[in-house]
Length: 236
Ligand code: ZN
Image (cartoon, rainbow, N blue to C red; front, side, top):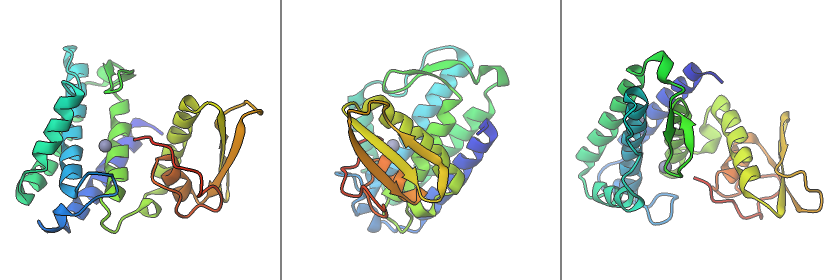
């Protein structure tokens, strides 16, 4: 998928996310999300501060002056906790303005700076163009985490296909000793095994694309044809 298609995924995902947030009144913002320990206020604050953090990486790529995503893990967590104290009106404004600032930052990035390397929160160096896909993941997956009537089954097919490749690659990199054989019903092109080691314990995960991707993203086994009893990996 090229950069323009990923920018389209971010634009559409941001709109979907914002529309869901707009349906929630202030009392509904206090309800829990699907992420343990976080209310919708925490999640909205996190999505906004993630936009700012990715904006800092974009600024780093543009200027060559290092700007980390977050000063520290503690600073990130404190910022989310503080953000969750904002009024509904303030949260909605923060959400809107942070997303617009990120889009403006990408717009201002010269064509020859998109391969510039920046560091993720996990410490990995990546070309800054990957921040677009990172943001697409944030807005679409957290839209489901918001628990406001939108789920993986509602996500666009092209997003789910790219996420499938991403999450299966991530499982392959992290899992040893267990071998996941992941397949999507009706999609022989989307079949993967996370290890070549045939002596490893083999676990079959299959179902519709949305359900397989939800499981591999650490969001439970609902909708799977097989493997729903296999604990979902932690991922994002
Ligand atoms: Zn997130």
